[in-house]
Image (cartoon, rainbow, N blue to C red; front, side, top):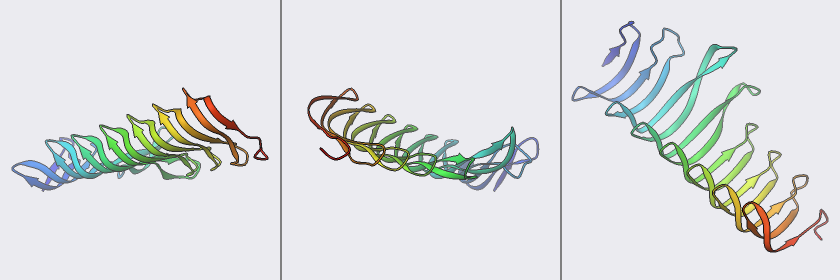
Length: 193
């Protein structure tokens, strides 16, 4: 079935169950061809289950298109479960993956991968409330690894290894506290000595 806004624009097209929207496509109240809002399952008027959320591509306050902002699992209208979050890269003129992994209540939570706008990895590992937490790998934007080891609430904490930005060579192996080298460890120069 189909539901329309008072303006005559299409609001929803899809399946109903007991007079409630169940699965289909939701639209923004716009006569523009770029008016998709969501495609997927719905429960109690909230995104719930598997779906895709859309957003606009705006240049100089003009909408020129749309892209998928998020695709994955929803619970009560929030990103929850496995999913992919996208950002629009104006230099590349296309959407790119910003994050893929686990979500809980719209936050990165569990295992995930975060990416820079150039598409290179930024972080691979565990998240808690959208902060690096647990075992993980941080990367410089140039693609070289920055750090590998334990993290707590976004900071280096415990055992870990840091690397030089210029060449990816090991800089330090040892203990960390509050994002700083702290305790036992070995410091290296660019020659590995």
